[in-house]
Image (cartoon, rainbow, N blue to C red; front, side, top):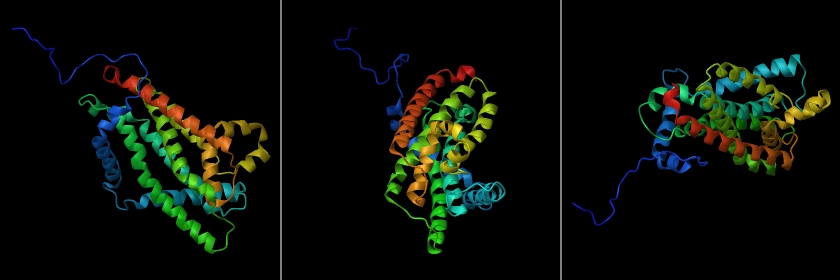
Length: 287
């Protein structure tokens, strides 16, 4: 029996080409699954806990108190005239969102090996859900920061919001992009070389100390001017400084530095997504 017309197929399976592809269109087609993962990530945090979301508040409060005692009290590091709780809370708020996106997305392959080896879906859905679900925790801590801010304003502290605070959505997007980009690159590397996870944990701890979370850039310029280039090359520096400058009115802000961080975050996210998609094809063979 001959066919006069060419047969039409619903699904065509063919090998992936070598062209550069981020496969984001497929992630969008699985947006319902993405929303399911986001809901799961938020619910799991509360599961079998007594205090629930209060832990989101307890952690930054205790960290702020510790920073006040160690760095503000014992070390005597200046906060540029800002109230210490506000200064440290602003840095902790930004750092926590970045580090949560980074650490949780860096274990994507290891923690989801069982699902990845049985069911097909674009694997980028999982790390993307991490960045979005962490916004829930971020905004709870941001509400705490605003409450603390209002208290000090009423108390007469010399702080004030300016127009640069309008950059807030962009700053959060950049923090998430950096955390997600670095996280999925590390996840791709530790998929094959598991001992890199130990090095990564140590590196993240050191990373905070070259980020102006516990000190202003003015102190770095004054005491360690020869190492300023290291801090300035850190893409997180201008983001956190812009946040402090916009909401607290004190800090070091330049459009060039912010543009550098923005370009860096876009590039690292693109590279990370590409590397992640390349590794996921051979993930089952490696595991």
